[in-house]
Length: 251
Length: 336
Image (cartoon, rainbow over all chains, first blue to last red; front, side):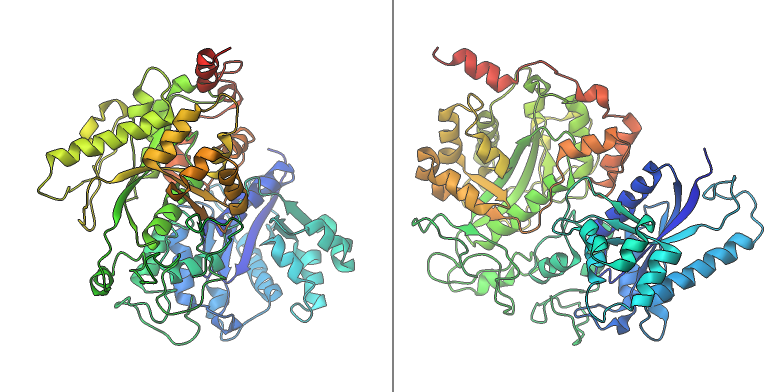
């Protein structure tokens, strides 16, 4: 195999809850990067957002981390990282990227013996850390005050973006409409999801709140966890075992 | 829950929607339309709350329903499995039906569809996919027949089977057990496909209804694909549950067909709010291109496909040049 650049994909988000769609992002992104011939994706990281993000209906992070962990039990290359969720306050995505980048640098400088084969032996370079997201996130760069311009720049300049297309979004258009993105478009990889799969965590939460089935939208183990812990039920629902929290626990 | 689109005057043909954004955010309201007898709220689809059906003023007699899905399942995907879940939630939420079983009936090899791999693989994949389901199972009768079998005959076969069983068990409610182990395709016997009934509330024999997507409804219009009397029997004797994103297109199809219109009460349109377009065709294409299909099909199915290298450019060329069985049969029988 030629000298491919090792890549680690990092996905930040609520994962409230994690769904098959989130997991697909990783698979699609990995396929895309591999098919360019230039990259070798060696790891995927899911980093659930801190509770202090303040998003409506966000269940406590220990649940979101646990669910992601269950979902990833059967994946041999994607893992959950709880560092972001364990911080005392919410932090910008770029800071999460910086944290993980320094972690990767630290591991790269350690002596590496024969490992599980994840790191290609023909390069000593530290892996490139890229932010993985859906096209909807790319669109949010345009939302006033949501992102700092300097952060957007750092993300696309120093790290790189892998963006998976979603129906109703026009990632190329978003890039062309932004000077920063335009300048670093070589660092923005647009991956196409070959199979349309539009389901979202929002839809899943609503379905759960209405007592509808979400089977086959997320792993069975996650569904079982949600039921066991009474997550995402409406306040009036009579799930006796659930721990009803007042804050943001509606469907 | 408001009835959603009513372009056509007949009130009994409604597209029941489970639209989260239009439902009132009321506590405990069931999705779906109110009972036609006058607004009696019925139990939510949550199976953990049977007590609500006792508390309601009348105890509505629910018709038991078995959902039958016919198709290639080449391979089975999460989308196929979702159809069952969506259809069950909807039918249960009307208060008039109680879905007791789901049956996946993969088509036989004699169908001669391009790219169709041998039935035993498709059956095993479907069995792997439904391993964790407590109510959906696979039936191999259709796939074991030497000749291709019309859908209406499959419906009839399963309905007769239920009627026969009901005759044998008039005193007790049928207790249906799903075998826990993976069955070999060749070993399946007629009576071994049974599922556990959650609430024995049997009034008569369960009705077998055809579960499908909008594509099947549209395919009624393809020349020689269906016999018109078969379509009539399907909607008259059994019924159709069609899960679709484009409800108004489906309503239009029904409106424009005399036979469908006549039996519109037997045609239930379930609106699928989230495009979940995991078609088997795209799965096969992704596989040919070395792309991942993880999370689009159950893990066990993905592993099985990989283990057996089921789909390739070669497999896609199976039956190339052959005429699809129904087209062949109906053209042969049609008056010239």
